[in-house]
Length: 167
Image 1 (cartoon, rainbow, N blue to C red):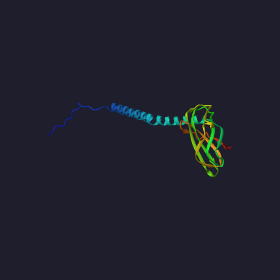
Image 2 (image 1 turned 120 degrees about the vertical axis):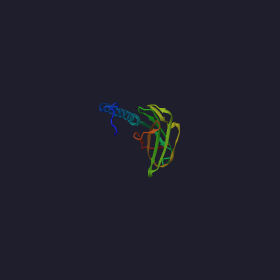
Image 3 (image 1 turned 30 degrees about the vertical axis):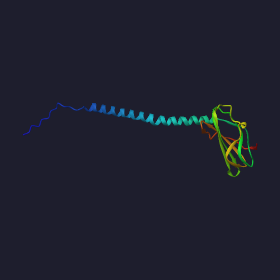
Image 4 (image 1 turned 90 degrees about the vertical axis):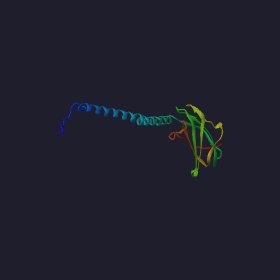
């Protein structure tokens, strides 16, 4: 016969201690994952939204004034002369100009100042010379001037001129 006796000298972890350890492990894991999500996802998204909001506020506080404008030929414009002033509260880096004509013709040019133009400063002066358009515009009837802030176009702050004369 074989003697089957079990020794009770080795004991396991009590159920209470194992439950406490398991709960502590789960809480630690939750804290690590939530911290990773907050720093990796939430802060990155917040930074992007903050940057877009800043750009929009800069655009909204921009006001342009077209002081003087003319084209080289009223029937078929290839170049333009204009004076543009910054009347807003934000410094701008330049302007983007679109000249629209009859029949859907379109000519554009972009002017970037050497340095940011402060509020109440002249961005582009007619005396600076003639600006060549990207294409010839048949009978120009509308000129749109958009501010550039930090190289980004502010589409909502357009200044429009419809009374166009020949230089």
